[in-house]
Image 1 (cartoon, rainbow, N blue to C red):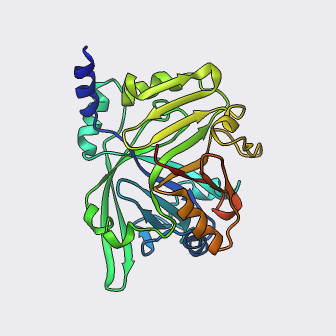
Image 2 (image 1 turned 45 degrees about the vertical axis):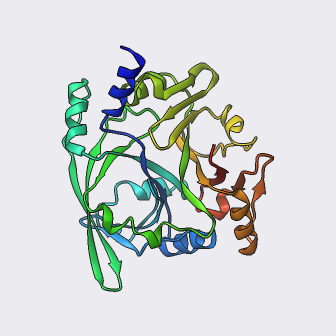
Length: 296
């Protein structure tokens, strides 16, 4: 296959990009306040129909961050209570698809055993009453996505939540750049993500503890505890965290200085690296090591 043919084939893949990163939190309203203080605009609160979970979202042009918490522990909460036993933090990433049914057929045609997409509704509480957001989620087999238990999300009511007034953030953040996944071993990571995203999208060396997956809009970085500091300015991973774990969220900003000035005004502690990247410790961000980095 020529390079042009390979690129065309890659463009036809029905799963691409990180749709959103999920942060599991113990108290939704406190988490919203914490992220408002960090300079993020949050949407009105939502609650999942038929589940006991609710959320606030932080919207960007191509993706978003979801603060996910328990609002009714008597209902199905998708294992969030178990996750929170070890503390708040990055819970998952959802991949994106414009057509969940097409993604389902494509996976089956490529020998991946997957169940049909499932409908999900979320009620968003607005001043004018509840708005109903609708999705189709295609849950991927864990053996196809090492390090993650993820799904591909199709938005059926996209315009209701990607509103201009929710896309602007005082800290200057404009989107997700990367999510870092830490695993004890990266054996099999490269081959499996090549199946999803293609040969050209995956780079790195499993033996050196570093695999990079370009999902389309954002990147997944797979590292080991030993190689984690190489990706994150010599920061050490909390060894109490069970592996695999999602350990860091990197966001794109047009100018890291804007983020630094805003955080300073809010008296939020942060570090500034030589390349300008602003790093907020997990204690300030509901268990998430948060990086604001200039677009490369």
